[in-house]
Length: 358
Figure (spheres, rainbow, N blue to C red):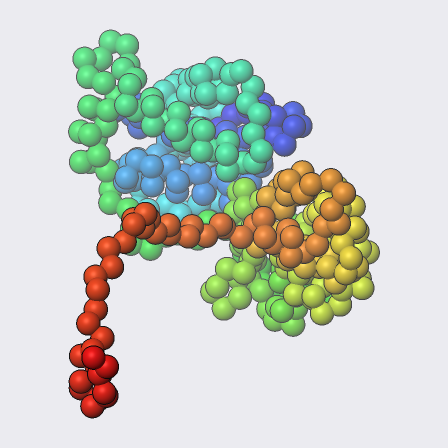
């Protein structure tokens, strides 16, 4: 297992990301995943996902002397980090560290860094988030397993992988928690501080303790073991990330603050805010429009603006009518001419003793 650096366009900006590469020695099957930072939680999570992908744990893992794994020494004298020792014990594999500047000691995986850059990340990818990037890399690994054949070997990677899986250690019943975890309380703005940045949580949890779990690319927030919020992890400093859904209940109670609220100004498109100002109900209608954004998605609501005919004053009910799925009314097809049989009504006269005129 080893790591390297690759370049992608993330949300339109050119970024250098860390890629983690793992390879099985017998079959040469591969696993590649990208992270924003080469920290301990990314390192442990990447190995865990590699074991998941392979369907088992190799009996021996060879790794370089990165600080996320080694706290002191190198090679045979390397002392692993405390959490890595716990991770190793949980998955029951033997661990070997390479000597400095000895890439030949892990040549199979060392070459994988360059191979994955040339074959999976060229031309430079444009992705909206880390999840999309890693979905692309995972699909590339699956294609490699299905179709690749190592030069000089008679069997394909897939054929050899099927043999190798018989010798992997079974995955443990319980997963190792690879996250960096803290327990905190939200501040007065319903945000939680984690790793130099603030993240919003639903306002109804403002007075409760929240467990924050920071993974390599994601941060999740839990109350009594129930996940109440999640964000893509931010690695800058002093940023505050909001989600409109966390504040919509409060805005419905206090609609006058809607246009000045930071969660609104930083998460809602200016075009939608300008359109909302045309609503006849003022701030109350604006909040109702934002509720539709939470329920249906901002892009969906904004697309309706171009469907409303010009000259018509928009209303929340009008927007809602475009969002509601159209009901299909069953059509009954009748014959053009119906046969009507004659009825002898004199039967009723005789039954009730009525006089029948002759």
